[in-house]
Image (cartoon, rainbow, N blue to C red; front, top):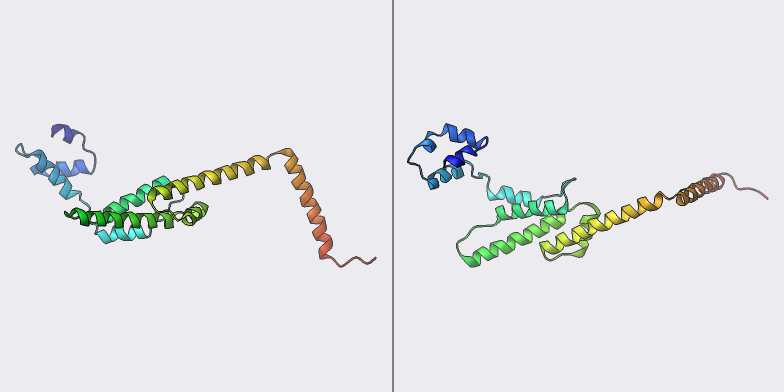
Length: 178
């Protein structure tokens, strides 16, 4: 226990220092762990996490893998705990379905659209599809940037835009009489 107390960081260390029962020589490792678990247990109701899972959206700088991990974490907190193995399996399947629906529905932009169109049946399928869509978007953007930077294409685009401007100028004015 002495080693464990040396590794404590704030605010856990402050709790340890303020709780004199934890400094007693007769405290067991189980009693020590129980005191910390009780103090730092999650006090939010399951409904809080259920709501968070239902409304989960991918963050602007969050990649699909990170978003999937966040959805899985929320699904774990929503999943009911039961001693019956059959009931536990049902809870697990429901949590997996909720996680999949939240993940697919919360993906943003083109990646989200492609993933929803693919209609994945598992989190692994959804994540694979999302990662493939990201790679496709990157390759598409990369080829556009590459192509747009060639000198020939720039001169052709500039020539075409000047011709379009001249055409638009004449088409908007009064018709030319022969």
